[in-house]
Figure 1: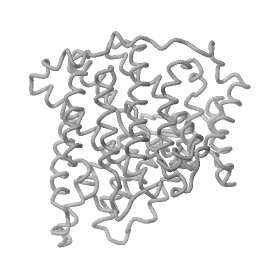
Figure 2: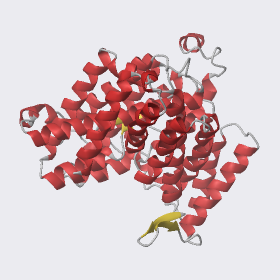
Figure 3: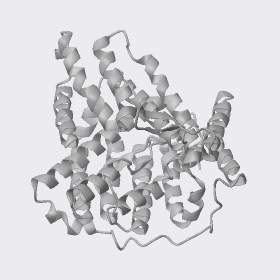
Length: 435
């Protein structure tokens, strides 16, 4: 135990193995939904859902444990939401591309990722982003995940007249979510240790008592076979031979690059890891994402990304890579105990997302709102993420405006050249996704 504590510098980070374990459990439970959502989304593309379930768990375990041991950050990685929908509905269904070919596109993008990471290009890009924009990214992610939580809770619903509106608060599931949010905020306000995790457990128990959450039919079940998806990306790399497919690869690359970079910056800012506006060991953290994406493409799942739900583990005290190691181990256990995960419904995870959103929104107070040249791009990032339902789109809006406002105020030379390059890339990116 002492060697583990020394390796992860638990004393220096003012944490311990018990706290890291609770943080690892909290992060895992908060993002366990991806084990069921990802197979459903990729299943629409014709992929075997059982195989995708297994691929999702293994890819998440590999990337998250790598993050913990090598980069030593409490940040979990798994196949990302949003990009999996792009994979199924835009590429496979919309463009008529076979899922095997689309998966080959993911593998090509992952290989490019590895190269960019090895040459520290991704790390340099993260470190040149201005502090105010990094704070905006952290706060924007907070609003984004709070919006997701409120939607999953049924408190915010779609409305054709006003785009969104208040949901039906008297439905049993909405009432369960409201209970979960209130009990979690009470625990947080009282500074109860592991408040978010306890809130999720209490919410699940109440849901079971009132028949809103079904008890699992079994405790253990064999992991579904990977045979239907394993290695298909390798067999179809030769199919990437048209301009259309190269654009698909570029889109996978851009979306995953900035989703992950933005999320990591936000989480590192929340946990206080940033040093002199730079993220220590950023290269190793980004390598974990690249390794996860490569492994996932070979196993048979869409691109991986750092998960904003990691903030729930950080919020309960997770500060070292040991949190990620525990989270990764739970993903492996999930292969055997998958029936138990049916207890973790959206009503159980929604309160955690809302509470963490509040915590991350605190970064707003550190933004220099008196300097409009900085405040305007920061505001677009913050408001853009929830309104476009995309971390990368929100970042794009702010990064495009930033060099424009800086030039307008005579400070164009203070903008790092790469920020101009990023602005051009984001303009191209927005044009691509618009079509």
